[in-house]
Structures are given as C-alpha cells and as structure tokens.
Amino acid sequence: MAKVDQAMANISITPESSYNADELGQYQSLSTAAVMALVLGLLSAAAFFSPLLLVVPFFTIAVALWALARIRSSEGGLQGARLAYCGLALAIVFGVASVTRVQVRVEILRRQATEVAERWLSMLGQGQVEEALGLMTSKAKSKISDPGEGSSLVPIFEAELSGAQLLQDPLAVALIEMHQSDKGATLQSEKKLVFDLPKPRAVFYYKMPNAEAQDSLFLLSLVKTGGGHLPGVWLIDAWDTEGVVLP
Image (cartoon, rainbow, N blue to C red; front, side, top):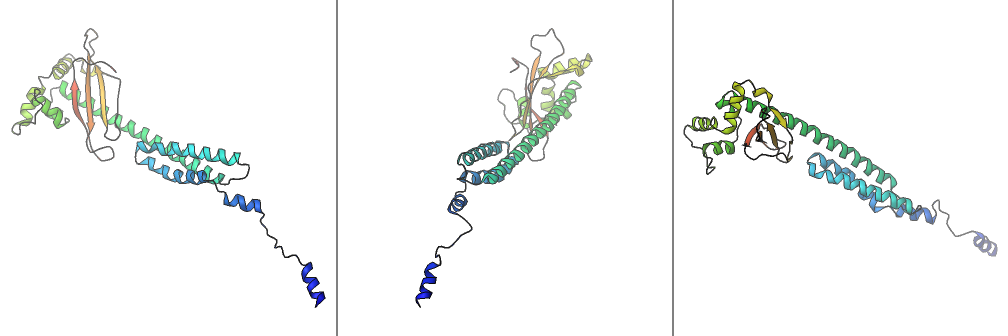
C-alpha cells in the first residue's frame, strides 16, 4: 500500500495544455476597432443609395487604419488585423464604385439637360411656340402668363395666351432675330453647370454671338421631373436676361 502511495506522489498532477497563457490572452484580446472596421466596411455599400452616404466608406478607412495602428503597437497583445484589412478593402471598393457611379450619372444628366436647353432655344428662335411650351414647367409658364404676380395660368386658352406673351419675351425676341440673320446656331454655352443630385437641376449661362453687346449673357435654369432616381424629363424652369454675370 505504501508503494502505491509513493507511485501516486511521483505522478505530476499539473495538467499540460497545448495553449500557454500568452496565447490564450491574445485570443481573448480581439481588437474592437477591427471588428468595427469590418462592420462599417459592409455598411459602406449604402453609398450606392445616396451620395451623402459616401461619408461611410471614408469613415471606415479611418477606423480600419486606426485599428491596424493599434494592433501593430500592441506587439501581439491585440488581434484582428485580418478583420481590419477586410473592412478597409470593402470601404475602398464600395467607395470607388460609388464615386464612379455618381460621376457617370452626373455626366448623363448633364448631356440630357444640355440637349433639352439647346432644343428649347432652337424652338424659340424658329417661333415654334407650342413645342417650346411643351418643354416648360408650370412655374415658367405662369411667369409668362402673369409676370407681375406669378399667379397660376388661366385655365382657358392657356397655350394661346402664354404663347403670345412668350414670343414677346426679350429672350425670345433676341433668339428670333438671331435666327432670321442665320446666327441662331452660333450660341455658345458658358460655365457653369450646377447639379443638385437629390433633385437634379441645371443652370446654364449662354452668350449671344454679338461681341459688341454689353449685356450678352443670359441664364437658363432647368429641372428634371420625377426626382433623381425616377423616370422623368428635363424641363425649362426659368430664365433671366438682365444683370446676369458669371459666378
């Protein structure tokens, strides 16, 4: 019996483990910033839905870089570098793709607005009143119908009344005179083109071809019906021929 007790005493009761204390400590010390970077990286896809949400990918990049810096400076005390790198990659991919998408969309809108503006000016120059009225918003028509008060249009003979006054507008008169002298096609578009992406609007500055004229600039404003992401058409919303200066 004594021999059995002695043999048991010689056996180490301390269990061996394949993980030491340092490894267990590193496993438990996962960087919170790295996890946050990964989550924000996934949320960066929201930038596709609105240009205002482009702030998410940029913020994600900052968080991911901060997490990587903390992990490096911890000298093995923190883990999660792969999570931070994944969040960083997602933010860059979604951010670049969203910016490219916005630029392409703006260019498409710019071409559409430019085409409508040129068509409307050409119609006025040729005296095509009904066609020109079809490219105008109610706001623009009401200004022609009653420029003093800006009231609503007269429900009866709306096109005839507005059309007659439209042909007397200073811009229409100038365009008709230019068209009669074969100078209508020489209008040159001036800067700038401004877009409000949530509700697309365009502002053009045009210059009359007569270099001797002091007040040769006029402003043309357009708005896209239907909203930014809905089907719609560009319409003339307003114009101004007096005191227009380039911004």
